Image 1 (cartoon, rainbow, N blue to C red):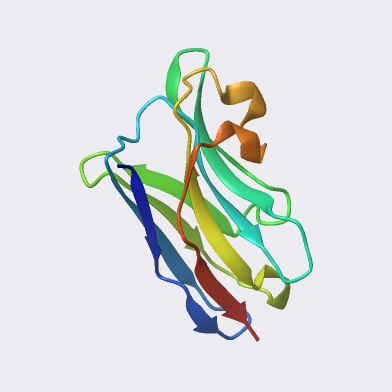
Image 2 (spheres, rainbow, N blue to C red):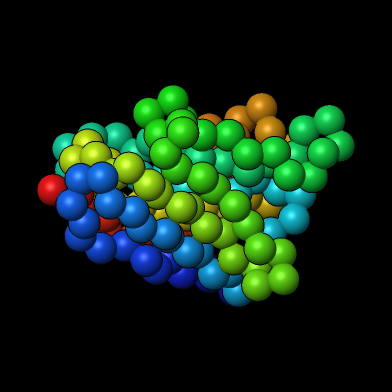
Length: 129
């Protein structure tokens, strides 16, 4: 069975930093789409950052405009863990954060769509005041 387990969430003041981790078991971060999504109360889940393969390049990271320059997605193939470094946090970043992993190597064109991801973690809460 595939399991994605997030950690690293918490409560911070505006301007602070957190690093989220997503450890995978039964799944290997390779050429498929992986990413971080978030969902605030009363809002739809939205993509925050994704990693995918394009033009044969194994690792290509993108970030949503709302977090560009503040958040950084990365992955450690040895530890089989996905990270989201979040700096300059703002109150509007408050949400439940989920990591997601897909199994389709051709998922690049749909990388920002939830349907591209078969596996989801349970979520970790980030609260910024």
